[in-house]
Length: 315
Image 1 (tube, rainbow, N blue to C red):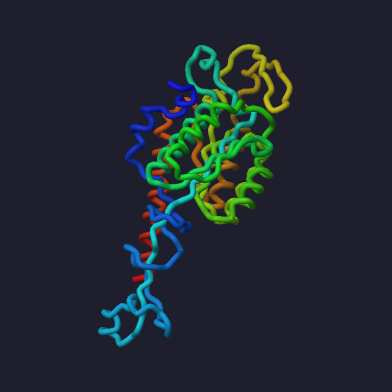
Image 2: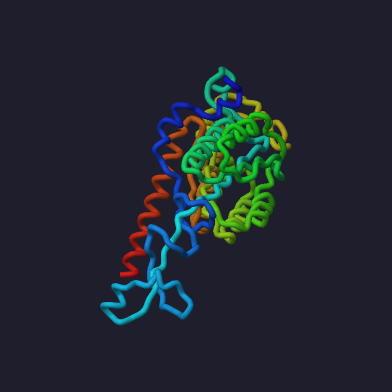
């Protein structure tokens, strides 16, 4: 097995293979697929009517309405078109962190877990013939694969992740702003990161994606020990992203650390909620398919609620 194939976990792919990654907003596209488009035309999904004006194609006249009310109106439809899925994978130095179990050959680093998550989402997108791209970043873009629907895109994504060693500081705000400005076409943006950045940078970057009306999923990937701080005895903590080493007694810090962490996590979730983004916190000890199923279940509930409200409003 090629080394890059480790990102495509067979058990995870088997469990998610029946899922569909469906955007909840209108996206633009040119290839018939599974997603709604703002382009009007002949399609399977009826939207509403508009008044007939001279020069309109008479084939779209609703003759039943004309017969009932003597009103000349046209049927309007939504084309179903392809989705552009953009994967933004954090490859900064903090993503190299792993719990002590990793030293015994068990578990994942945060980067390995995030990469497998990215590969699984790419697999879903490719299965339904949607375009997928990958951007690896730290303080700037490290590497990028452009949007592709080619069957080889999954291999290229895995090879790029395999050849990248997480390093450098995170500059999440400026990187996301630059990505949003260079990606004007609306699409599905999946950010996979430990969000090791100041809150104002996180807010700045996510605001830029929201302004472009991208459909955004934020996977907040942490190591289980970062959430529980289980360390005992004097411990030497090695700084990442240019932070220094620090030897401390974890028992003296645990309560304040966990309180600060809860406050930070609540604020990150609130930022995402304020922008209407889907946020999911996960950790390297959680099964990958569970993380994907959870966020897709939430998105499907939102889509159904939105669709139900649309029909009630139009009745």
